[in-house]
Image (cartoon, rainbow, N blue to C red; front, side):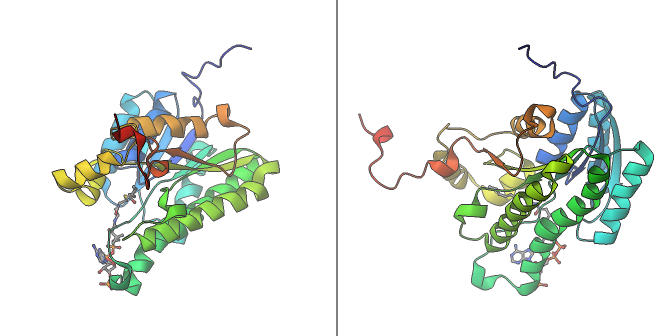
Length: 268
Ligand code: HXC
């Protein structure tokens, strides 16, 4: 068996990446382009989207910046239909747009709950439904959803996000089975603590918080958007052709690493 040549594995292919204006979404878009793909990056603010589209072109792909709020089902469908009309295909959808803030459950308003569930769960379904229609007609396509491991272990302060992401996992598994025989795969990626401007400011705002997060990661460092994008590229490519309904955790062992009893790493 020879190893596949992956340098141009996305040549001639088209991806849509939501939340593509920054962080992990931007890195996935650029990584897809670096292997020859065309990427439509989606978000609410034009300026960062244009910058991602520029980086996509710089990486060797074709890029376009599309403004859309993923909470608007009609706008999402029109956006995906437009991509297919212009490029004649859609090979990949990355539901990466997210909304989050840390808040104790009893202080979370109904509207705050709704805002996050609308973006994360409903937005992911709207995109999946719209792209899935074209992928099923073509008999091929892959959908990747960005989640977090607290979808299954929970985490204080994230009831809205954890519940929404758990819903995304259930959606992924359900449709993976429904659509498997028709050539469409769905998977999730669960990044751990990733050095992005947004995450850093919200999740480890000062040195103490940063040290605390760092001490929870067995590999002993944060990850970065490029490392996450590398795992995403695998799930978006034909290299993972038999993988569907799965979650790839890219967290340096963080969620497994909670020492409750004596920890032999601290001895001798
Ligand atoms: C309590 C808050 C709040 C806060 C907003 N709300 N921020 N409540 N604490 N910090 C409440 C508001 O009071 C309001 O409820 C409701 O939420 C909606 O707020 P709006 O600002 O009107 O909504 P909107 O402009 O639509 O913004 C949506 C958002 C926002 C989710 C609140 O944060 C957003 O758009 N974020 C997008 C970017 C983002 O968060 N990315 C992070 C992804 S990172 P009331 O009742 O007052 O009307 C991520 C990392 C996971 O997910 C971690 C992995 C380890």
